[in-house]
Length: 270
Image (cartoon, rainbow, N blue to C red):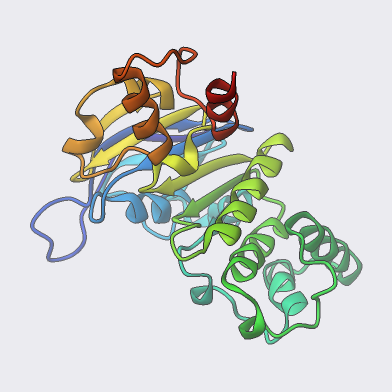
């Protein structure tokens, strides 16, 4: 489990804390979505998870390990993979397989195991066959999946995704979201940071940040049912849910609860 225990952090020279009094947990094998507008503290939260930033007050505990303990830094970072919003910021290899191997090589892992990890990670993200491709020749979605493969090669128990679909077209977005569901089914805990609720309607829990503080914590269904939270935090309702609300207002009978695209199509055709 990852536990944020009353965590606060302030950047040097800032007039207010980037995050304040954050208390939340991420269990193995679940998806916790963190929503918020620009400047709400989402990316700061991502960097706090694996010790890139350390709390000013409070603690971040990863499976019993305090991220502030320097002797545990590499152990924590091997348990928690971090994928940034722009994959170009963390792609370092000259070809795909070299990039995926970078992390395990720095851990001093045997070459045969590195080969196994690289092949396995590329298979999971659907990049098998592109081992010798230069990263700059990949599409945006492929680059994002490459960054995820690099994190997976470290065999993390948890994966932190900071706005992983922000720079992608619909096809790339769909491939990343499908990959997240696959990893979740394999027991990886996912911290999915975004400002698009549509990306995380299948998450078990949602936390909404506003000016660095938790403004809401609950399920996606509870968030959609709570009037005013999204708007007050500078977020938009997913288009599907806007359509659903409009249909209900006109008296159209729909099943209770938020619907998927498939569920909406079935309801409209029945």
